[in-house]
Length: 419
Image 1 (cartoon, one colour):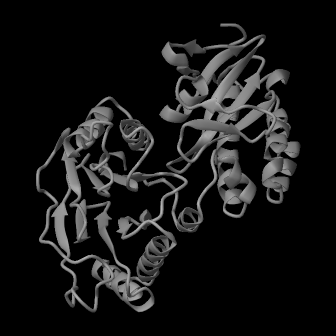
Image 2 (image 1 turned 180 degrees about the vertical axis):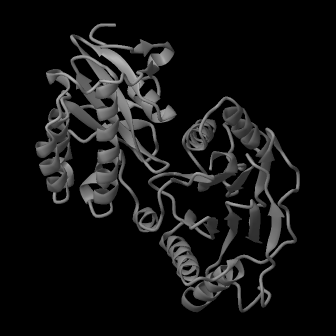
Image 3 (image 1 turned 180 degrees about the horizontal axis):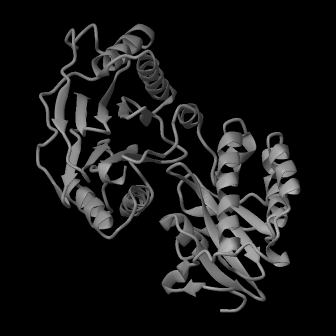
């Protein structure tokens, strides 16, 4: 490989290992213009989103690196969309850029007389896209600086996409329906995590979903997760789900326990949308002890995966009415169930559209195929977010991209061994 500097090993699929030599920063070719870099970081606070590619190039130059390119993943995680509107998207599958995204590890390739390093853009546990950094040669110092640049721009993208329609539009490949637009405004990041747990979710159809939704949040050492499926597939069903999510967050942020959260959603739907209800599962995981508490409101029961198998019935519970029927069917207090997870356990929440997806012959995707896919992908070393990305594409392929119902999946894992 040309121009790789010292100590670079290029293995299968472009995997790189660059040890940090004791004096990697010495020499004029690796000099960092710290004053210029400070100016650019200050400037970044007011940089508009469409100006990020130019800012990235100037920051790279201050770090002694070559030109850069920023790619963000699209809503369906099939393409890496360049922020430079003159460039073409790259497929997530079958490219080194996509490999960096899928595995959350750097990849390197020859680029004529230079080297191209593909750095994953990650905010916490959320995969955003990739940063391409061109450099004349590669050593430990340049790898560290490329990584620093990726960290910086992941934070910038995350902070600016909260108010940027331009960034949101760049991540789309199709026109979004109004109910979906409204519902997506309430959705959190697809993946969140701490040292002790990670939660990740996907939903389809990306541009036409209406009643399904997920939510997850970390409060100190407690992970809150929720999945909802509102009746119908129109603006009203999306509104019901949005009200349910807002009520749940309002109760959580007010310090309510799990029963309080469900009660608040019941009351909100009964008061504001009395003709609508939704099924759902709400969970609370103590990420220190592994104590799991959950409430199931007329929804398919959560699944517990341990040691590469589903523990049948482990999280089943007596049936309770859907959320929003407080005045008709719901008891005064919801039943809250509790168990204790073991390290490495995964809990799977899903809507019925997952298992009811049908192929051309009418055969259902089914629960066994669903859980087997997750177990096989996880045992192959895939990260939870990548497991669900592959799974949702498999479900879409199974139904020829013509889903009859919304499909939402949320997977969380307790891993205290990583603390």
